[in-house]
Length: 413
Image 1 (cartoon, helix red, strand yellow):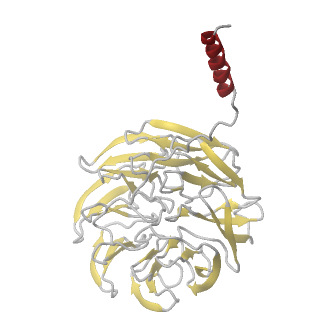
Image 2 (cartoon, one colour):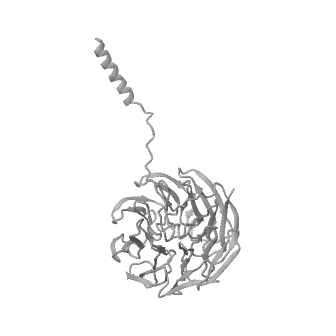
């Protein structure tokens, strides 16, 4: 064999060896980097509104506890909504069973003030750019604007919202679904700008409308449809998706994609659906959890990974592919999921069988973005964990309970 043929044979053998090499590198993880969207009408606080922001991402720019321990509980009976935080980590939250007030606590649990708003609603406050607090009192039929010393700046009386969340656009206009199936848009001065009626608008406590990143669309949950896309420029409904109600609000990423949880009474018939900004389906991820609670909104981390679940905790990449899943061993997710700047995930769960049968054991759990277990903390002597928790700027988590006895403060140790 001449030298040329020897070289050719050697090259062929080398190519076969390389082609048969099984030590291939791992697949590159698919990410879709997310940023904090500038929203000039909101106060720049650690947690200014329900589930953190107008897109309901549940994502904080601060780290949560790396190892959680109970700090203390703030006694307040009758909470159904969520809470917000100002820059000093003061807590704003309402109750609707005894006091019917909006309360402001400091982070060690002292009451700073209470505002008489006749609150009969799970509505979560919003803190605006000038530290004005906005909140609806539900069946009281009013939307309030309060200064940071509890003075009523104005009261819009027409219809109240019983939704757990109201929203605010970039100009500071307030958006809420009233009990009369109307979307009301109220100016920062308390004047009605416009209203839109649709009998399909969801008016109960499970509702929390969310905004597109550019602020041009408001996504509203429906009663016999899943979501209605309201064009706030034309004041019309541009598109509708689904044929059944969703009990957790849509969350929206930086690219304008929506993620909605579809849960049905039939065990195992659940899906997370991704829609683009035109209402077309990007992908559907079916999962077989037996039961989904209401108000268990997913969270999106800074890599665009989505976290959600029922009896299991799931993580998908931006293309809807399963990254990992964790069996919660008989527990159910009962609260909206949140995430921190390090992409750690924090969930509230109730264990011991079907979640509506009490008493139960309640835990706050934390996992890394890779699905590694970080820590868990049992929350004792409470009926149930509640709506969206909040992350402070000093590594604490504030967790409301539901129709129970207090607000749980979790510290880092």
